[in-house]
Every structure is written in C-alpha cells, then in structure tokens.
Image (cartoon, rainbow, N blue to C red; front, side, top):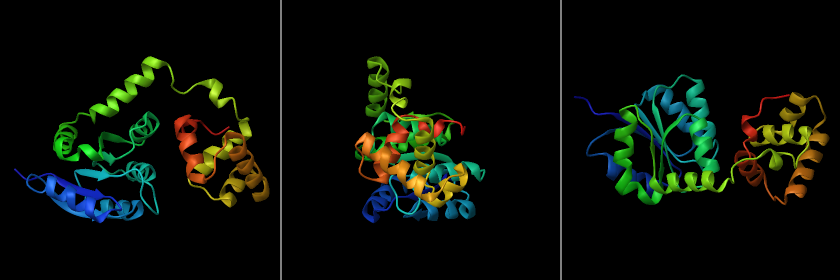
Length: 216
C-alpha cells in the first residue's frame, strides 16, 4: 500500500525539520513551504493527501491559505499545527476547511494520530483545544450580539474587509467610499477598541465572528 503524501508549511526551518522526523517513517513528504502563498502553489502541483500548516505565516496567513486551497478544489485533508489555542482561532480554522488542529508542543505525541484520523475521514483536536472550547461553551463567553453592537454597521463592513487582507483602495472600491474615509473608519475602530495594529484588528474580527457576516 502506498504511503499518504504530505505537504508541510511553516516559516521556521527547525520546526519543519522536527515535523519531518516525526512523519517520515510512515508517510511520504512531498514538499515543504515557508509561507502561505508558496503552500498554495505547491499544493496545486504536488496533489498531497494531507496539508500541515501553521496559522501564522508570512505573505499569506494559514487561514487564508486554507480558504484558497478549498476554493481551488484541493482534495487534501488540512491539519493546522500551531501554537494558537484560543477558541476563536480554532473555530476559524475549521470554518476555513480544517479537519485537524494540533498544538505545536504536542507534535511528538499527537501528530501521527491526527494525520491517521483525518485520513480516515475523522476530525482531530488536541485535548487542550477541546478543553478550551468546552470551557468557552460552559462559561457562555462565546460571540455575542452585544459585543458586535460596539461597532456600527459601516465599521463592521470596513473591519471585515480589512481583516480579510484587503488594502484601503480595495475596501474603498468595494464600499463605494474614498480611501481617506476607509482610513478614518479604520483609525476610529482601532481607537474605539484599543487596538494598535492591523494584526490585532484581524484577531478581533475573528474572535467576534465578523468574517462570517454577509456583506450588506
């Protein structure tokens, strides 16, 4: 029986080497990418059975890379291998098409199990991730309409488009407003929410489920 084909993606070379050592005895490693765009391009030519990727990667983040893989019809099972255990990241990963979610510190003990499970058509989450999700559910601290109500409808539109990685010019064109107005809204949102960077804006949008909102 042929071995499953695995494509890796992480921007840390030493961590990629560690993944190889864990996987090579049982799986065929067909390639390794160090950013999301390189991963998407490699997947289109290598046709892997499994893609292992991080959430935080340069050029194109892991969540966007996963969405692009799914949009392109990639058949591979997607497993995130990341240090992010927050429920907001986990939920967004599965919305993007993930079948598995493994924390980096547990790679040695969990990764082969995760790959085996997703190849069988099942899902896999690190136990600590499952615990965090259950904790959020039981505490009732999930996304709420009240939290979203902190922003106006227009602010949510701008935030959603910025969090999707669009430039101010693209956002302006999509909403029919000027770039200066987009920048004004972005600055107002950051000041209102106490955020300091586009990355923090993106994390906020993910945690509040704003990327799932339908455009108005």
